[in-house]
Image (tube, rainbow, N blue to C red; front, side, top):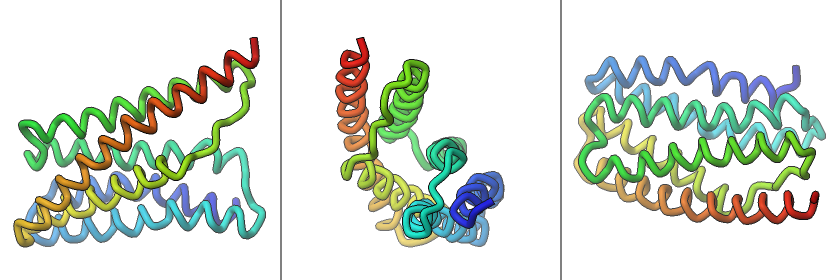
Length: 184
């Protein structure tokens, strides 16, 4: 197993611990959850960088990297919903992000079934991921009794991430439909 793949696997395995720390509540739980989440989010960039730099790109990494991202984001959004950190209108960006992830995963499966070429990640999709990770880190920190502006900044970034999620979801749909039409 390569170092990039180990980092992806570590990110996936850290997710339940992040959820448990956040759910435990209190200053320490939220703080440790935010730190571990931020570290795990950083490995998302690092594993891709190392895979390219060390020429260690693999089918395992191509499959599990997006799964790790989706599990990490989905679980943390779920915990934040459970904690009441996301309520009212703030459910909208959480649901938009989750819906986009499920939708794009379905498109990827459909494309793989037809042997259509893989659509590379766009700059906007990378920005979406960065906004999501920053938003969720701040929202976890807000649960650690930090100043109110941290939670406000986290919510603003979550809304921006949701807008980018919708934008990139439609871009991915257009690219997938174009690719699938080229195959017929």
